[in-house]
Figure (cartoon, one colour):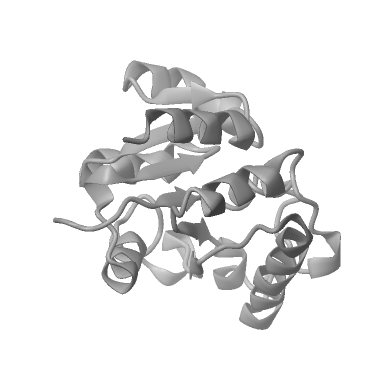
Length: 183
């Protein structure tokens, strides 16, 4: 596939603090350096796409409207830093509640939708997240994944290392890697 590279970011534990099922957008807090990291990707003309599993919707802990309010809040928090997300994609399912789906990470549906919409070349793209499931799509699509140790990242660090997936302490360090390795 030809197209441009992009950066796919997980949300909870990567961009924002992960308080659990976030139903109140007012409780959203950016992780240190996250807004500047996104702004640097924006200045490099790399599309930034957030892909997130939101099983709280399937579990009845968060409504879809509450989730959408958190999307808007994230955009608001990034704006004063001259940072923006090009698109948000979310999976509202959980296999124990709704059965299997094609959009729950590490499934590829949401990434393929973004690639089609923005003319993205997945093989030239990056996946950054705090869980192995956030970065495994990079293996399937030929891109590069970076596990960040913020959020729950330390839980999956050994598995990531065994798979030779790059590890970074946080989103700003991961973005440093993306920008220094970009052709």
